Image (cartoon, rainbow, N blue to C red; front, side):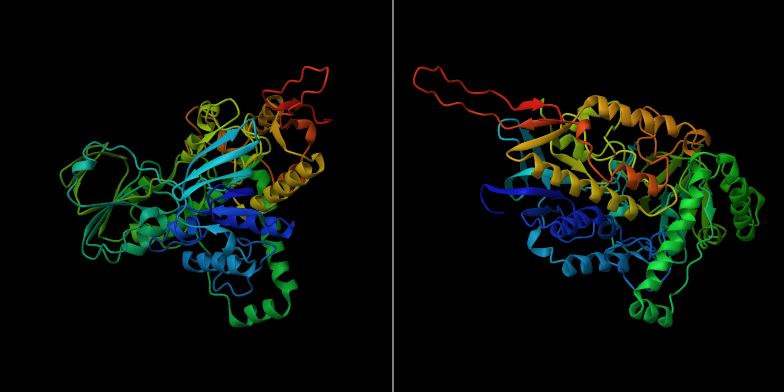
Length: 514
């Protein structure tokens, strides 16, 4: 990294959000930017999560950029390897590699009030930027619970997002902790190999069949020759999910039929009434993310699998002990326990205009204006920010909406001219979040009777968007300057004959009309 490098935009992260931001910057004619990535390659969560069976639970043609369609997806639900390859392809297709700064983990970002820029410290040097676009994503930092005795466990321990491919699971006694989206893919993938598998389940998920199949050569040929067919396929997938949203956000009782289908899915594979009882949730379907798998239940019914309907409490040597007292001797422990979503570590590394960190600003819960900006942190934006997650559709749709907002944000800075920054008004942030939380009260995530990773420590859902992707796109199409304070660089007045002359000590703030 060049000494004293300054860029117009610094993008943090090279997953879908970061690469999407980089592509949009180039399409807007902006080339003075860098993409800071802590790893040695692009891909984000699809680079980090390489566990056996890893795949997307959103159809491939919807889980890709609208501006970079892929006619050659091999399956209706593609695996990790193909999604990562797609992101590498996007990087090359749009000429992003010269902008990449790999092995450059951001250690600290500090807002400079005097020069109206961000000073950024990374593991490979320092730089500054007029605007920061944080695209680290909510699924980037694994969460491992503090279990008494874990440090002295003599066997192998790793998180699903940091899979140890050098460790041979064949014949081993394995504890799988957690029953989320990763675990239901890992369990059927490793069950045939391991000697014994003990699954620690605090809360059973609702699981629907995953209707996956290979996409035929004829289909792929048609999509290559007639791109409009791929667009139509994407549009149909999107439309179906838009129609489903009201059941999640306004009429959760309508999900009862889906619940019946999920029960039948379980009954077909699990004949043991005792095991079915363990696996049957006691909350409304959709309150937690609905998981898709046609192999999870059959794997749990195999004779070498034990389901413990209780969380892991402690570890004594090589013995894992559940909260209900169940014990098992294991050689390896795999944590499928999710990520730091509502307490993202990057927030501790962002220091705003008043000297406090973003984590301190968000100590009572994440709050952002239109899921993108935070009061007190000028010219700082986030992709997949507060209340931008989805419970039933593709996050790429939300990312692209936020890219529209980012592009207009930069246009507004150009129009304002000079050394200028935009800082969201606290009242605008509060109004936006009050609207979001009011809508959240009716949703299945609030009324469904579960505790999920969507909720923060205060029980507020600061993760999911309580509406359609169309609504969010309308809300983020343009930047409303009335929601921002305009901050200008201090002006130093020169002394003139007969005058006194003085200099401003801090950035001038004004209304949107400035």
